[in-house]
Amino acid sequence: MPATVIVGTQWGDEGKGKLTDLLAQDMHLVVRYQGGHNAGHTIIVGEETFALQLVPSGVLYEHIIPVIGNGVVIDPLVLMDELAILEARGVKTGRLQVSGNAHLIFPYHQQLDALIERRLGKNRLGTTKRGVGPAYADKAIRVGLRMQDLLDPLIFREKLEMVMREKNATLAKVYNRLGYDPEVLAEKYLQECRPVLEPHITDTVRTVHEALEDGLNVLLEGAQATFLDLDHGTYPFVTSSNPVAGGACVGAGLGPRHIDSVIGVTKAYTTRVGSGPFPTELLDEQGDTLVTAGAEFGTNTGRRRRTGWLDLVMLRQAVRLNSLSELAITKLDVLDSFEQLKVCVAYEIDGQRVEHLPYHQSDVHRASPVYEVMPGWRCSLNDATNKSQLPIEATDYLRFLEVEAGVPITFVGVGPRRSQSLTWRPSPSLFRRCE
Ligand code: GDP
Ligand code: IMO
Ligand code: MG
Image (cartoon, rainbow, N blue to C red; front, side, top):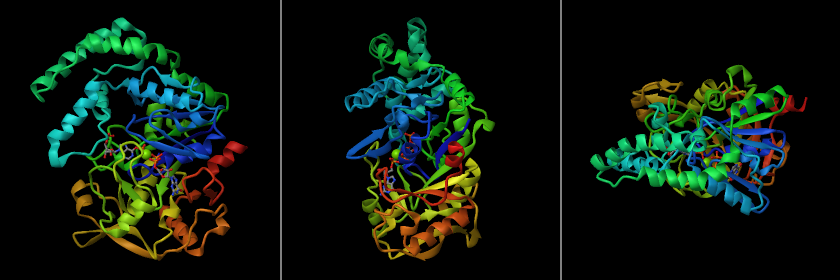
């Protein structure tokens, strides 16, 4: 009954999609457990690039049942678009299962997301403006509509009518904007979305449990990452869900004892999109080199990602928060051209050396990194297929990370393609799956 969680250990875009795709060949179910179409997961297969937002990365394998769990927020129009695009590219999507408990994102959520950002001005969070925050807020105050409501037109109309009264008042009175006609909106969703999505809507908790009871392999694909977590991230510069491994339990309907292994995905350096503290950020040409070499532009919004050195203070915290059992280090090849590499091992705050992530956000903003400097390898790793082909400097870099994190590194990424990955140590989770 192995259940494996894939979780980002930084601020997102670590390469979770690629790792999910790599492991998918051994999986039966791949489940998204939180987030929405704020995610952008890239998978490169041969000459084709897929950028998935809502549909789990396992969809590309025909033997896999892709599942969108109850913890995800779904814009039905975006989901329909994504399914149509995949089908047009020859990917069969009929197997997709969508939780009836997943909440819906409507146009008013997206509009409010943008309006709130505008009101915040220079204090804006830099959200993806996909309506994710406002949709989770409605879920929490219990006025959200769920996927299952699409199946009951009476309930759908009634709930939408009720919630729209308040949304329209807010749009008009706070933001001086026109509202939406709930009847027009209801008609659109019931006419356009219901027929397409109905066959996918189901009890995904049952699907996941029955799979585990049958001894099948379940992969839980996280979106966003540990430091974008609503509870554990750099609040308020976070997303509105719980990407940490514990979120996989809630967002898929599992108990903690169902999870066998947790793989943390860590870029060999750090990136962040949007606002918020970033102690190791590079605002010089080294940062530009990381942007260029790593193609650091958002999969989803196209925004330039902020870049910096790897931060082990954060990584150690991520190990704890997610109970990581192994690490996948991605984009090691992006460091190919550097003569020297820096790794943050501690912070200095008010003249004090601090080795743990400060709980007080102001301290994180004031933290300056204490670096360990390591030699670079100055050659291309792109063609390495085996650990023994890595230069000694790259091996030393990985060994150092492994010791500092206290967790075995299993996968190493040396390029964006499926084939550009190598095994550093045998994965305990893969090993168990092969038994
Ligand atoms: P995700 O959101 O965590 O799935 O990551 P994204 O797909 O948003 O961003 C990761 C980017 O890095 C994508 O463009 C991937 O194709 C690319 N990528 C993944 N692994 C590697 C790697 O090992 N090396 C390089 N150069 N690119 C990689
Ligand atoms: P994947 O799954 C990187 C960031 C946004 C913003 C903050 C809040 O591809 O790693 P939101 O729209 O969620 O309310 O925005 O979170 N953000 C991401 N950054 N990768 C993501 O997803 C992200 N999803 C949200 O840039 O700073
Ligand atoms: Mg991404």
